[in-house]
Length: 409
Image (tube, rainbow, N blue to C red; front, side, top):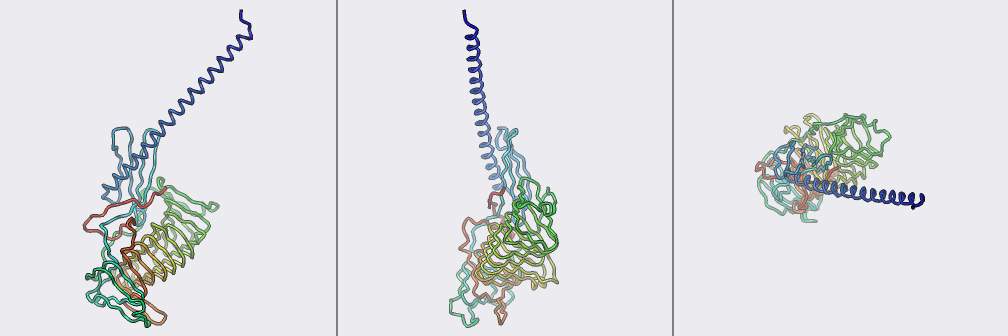
């Protein structure tokens, strides 16, 4: 006959075995669920990538929204393409039941590789080059072409030269695509005072765009602003070197970028952009003045030792307006991409890419010279092969394609 203590001991052993068995079953179930969800997540990532590649291959409109299935396995894709300043943003997601993967990219346009270095409008005068001026790539010049000249006694000091095919230009620059900032379909509006105590403002691209209003003549300083953000002001905006900007758009009548700023930003100004020395605008950035104001001088002044990866654009409608448009690229400054000046261009630095210029001039301490490049460099061959340019010049052959510039959060 069993003692009572032995029976309790047996019950205790059974309880322990039951608990251990339950724990093992729970661990097995959790692991099975984890691996199943991990497998679904991996499939969603692959499917989202496939949908994005499909959209890039078939894209033919400025704004697209698509819902579709690539395979009959229950996984759905949703894609949306919108303008984001001078570029476009592609927002994709793949979802299955309660699992969703989001991916967003900035897009640029690639065209058939060309070596166009310079397009200068023909107003009856030849292009003059002096000093260390070097132009490498195909050029379109006035009928009178070009000649090396003596300015400040340095005609032969550095042997100014053009290396490339030369053809005749016209009195008009190639037409470019619309430059206006297009407001997204979905956005929320806030004043920067809402984030007075916040050092970082981040808005993901899978959320409605944050439109951030600044006070008159505001300084952006001691803040990090990233993502799906448009910054607006009715007066001057000053960007301090203490600010960090990434992928945002800034729109104001005048924008000043102070010394040593390092940012990725698209700037839309109505009248003036001042870029001080030692600034780096990382890829993909752009500076644009497109506002039609005939009676007001508009200018983009880029200081010395600046690097810009993207584009610099000054547009104008009438001949009179173009006479009041000015772009200056300072010494030791390098612009990677396109510079489009439907006005008067002064090049003291370097353009790795293409320059489109209505007129060209150079100014020294004592004189101003029309149709002259002094100590400037344009090199179309040096632009990296994987550099995706912005969709700027209208392409009549429609042989362009869109590619991913960068992954955006």
